[in-house]
Length: 164
Figure (spheres, rainbow, N blue to C red):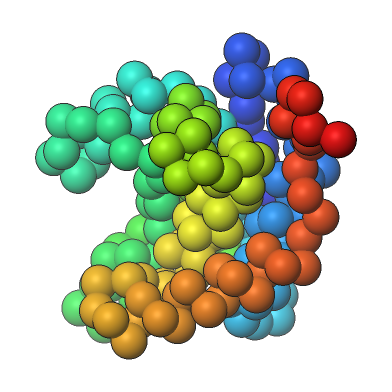
């Protein structure tokens, strides 16, 4: 698996890349990515970057917590991807972009640790790349069950200040 992780400099301290990689790998396995090599990108950034991406690519001029840009989302007339994939035998999934400030804010609102929120957003975003969705109750139940299973298999992130 090739996972490109990009963490904006101001958020690097306290976010462990190995932990993000573990989350993405477990989500890929649980999401039944199938055999073969896969490639995806994961970016941890700020509200403004996410807002611009949301505006430019979804037409929504607002920040959100996570965006997933799946390369196989749109299908061409023959059922294939709209994107031309390189003939390298690698399944190119796309990009997950997370607003770290939004993750911290949502964690505080729900009485959770910020790393727990970030973990959920990583898993949620990767599952979207694999075609999971929550636009219908049955799909949402399936997606939430996979998220819960993945998160139960991953070690916690760093401890919050004051936590023992």
